[in-house]
Image 1: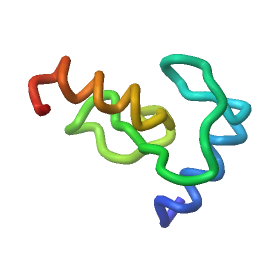
Image 2: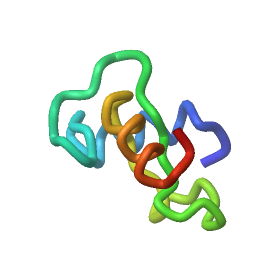
Image 3: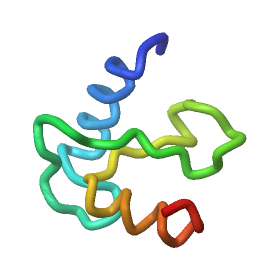
Image 4: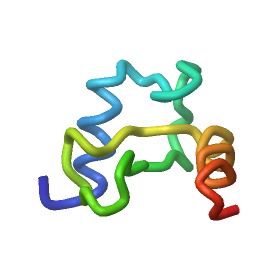
Length: 65
């Protein structure tokens, strides 16, 4: 996949439109393509779509926010 937009759509389909963390429906805009391992790159196996609320929590837990 060459674009984040394409990865976004693929992940939405794989996750059935749900946040990978809280399982709530993802909004049409403002979702985060999160890498589970930062050095692993934006591969299918290393990414997940999460809502902005979960992203804030993830970033805080990782010490970034």
